[in-house]
Length: 294
Image 1 (cartoon, rainbow, N blue to C red):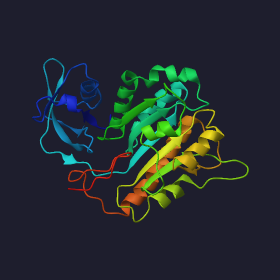
Image 2 (image 1 turned 60 degrees about the horizontal axis):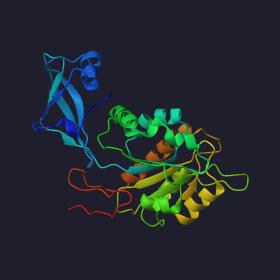
Image 3 (image 1 turned 135 degrees about the vertical axis):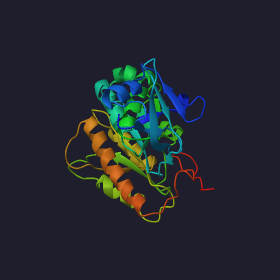
Image 4 (image 1 turned 120 degrees about the vertical axis):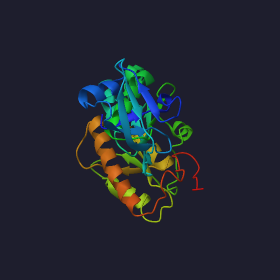
């Protein structure tokens, strides 16, 4: 844990005091790994959909083995770019590995799991798609990435293979003029190679964008997308084909590499514009109408 996360459910009284039981993983980490004693301080983050806050909390060791954290003034986190990852359900073991890794990326605010035409139907039944399994893994990723923005998860594998209708219901379809870079990762073929993912992001979220830069990144299953699916994403749903290079990558490698490249490109776009602090404004959410600072 690089950051002790405080969830809304931990703050029952809202008085700047949080009690963690002796069995809470955060208590164990503070006592055994950080070796903190009464009077010491630890770095904490309050998880909040508007961006959250970070600061220091004072430790008080309780007689029952638990930990009490007290804090007063915390600083709001700055506004950051936003990424929605659209992932065709992969091999379950890879998905379990990916949950905390994806959540550690500062810009990822939403993960959408879909069923591709070439997805293994058995994978759609995996326990890795259950909230009781992935929510603790996402929380671990948030802590490792020192993040205080929650990650929303939509699992849409039960009814149908991915389609324009399903993408519309999930708010992922665009027309290329809304300032959101929609990236369809594709290594291309012997006849045509898509542009690099970084170039597509810089083109669609570059200078002149009035909102915090955002992106949607679509990654296929182990057997890839079908030609029909590729045409649907690109020709009907506003996505741009983009490549991570000439290498043929495993799903987990493509996810990490893609998020890293897109995150860096969004950060580059973000630095070119002046953005109000997240403590004083509301940010546009992917798939929802734009909101203006009050």
